[in-house]
Image (tube, rainbow, N blue to C red; front, side, top):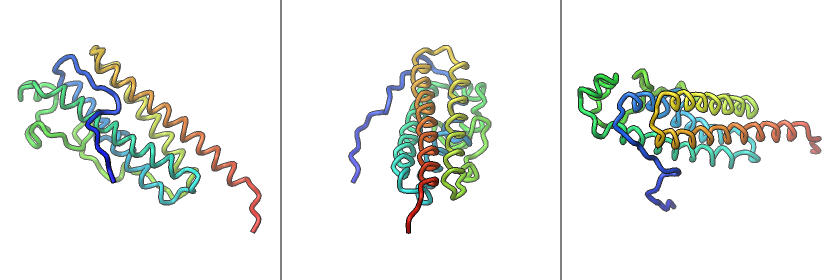
Length: 189
């Protein structure tokens, strides 16, 4: 069923060890507006949305998992040469104590991922507006993280992710309009 090619959606290059930036990036790994929350939200919403947009939710939901993999790769590369003292100085001491160098789904403040991040109302228009908001919040977070680093290599990858959030928001806006038109169509039974 699956054909696996060990290749990221977009290359991830990191110029230097930077555990502090890794801590910030963890927000997009396990935070409320991060890639895991988005993927789970969209793939869950598919079950109560009209057929016209199921494919869109499936496509974007699975792409979010590709983004999650990019974030994980960035965090790994930013921390792979870090000492425990560097991790501690970056605010990752608790993470290291609990998980070593392994990733764990939590936000930048260390709060664990919770399913309460997943919004689904069962109303297609309400859910799509939630999705638009999620994409815009993720875009803003990427912009903030880009501002927190001078590493042009990682900025490149982050700009790619930010632009994908913009495209996803546009696609969700298009889906809202499509569903509004569908609701206004005269139904003959």
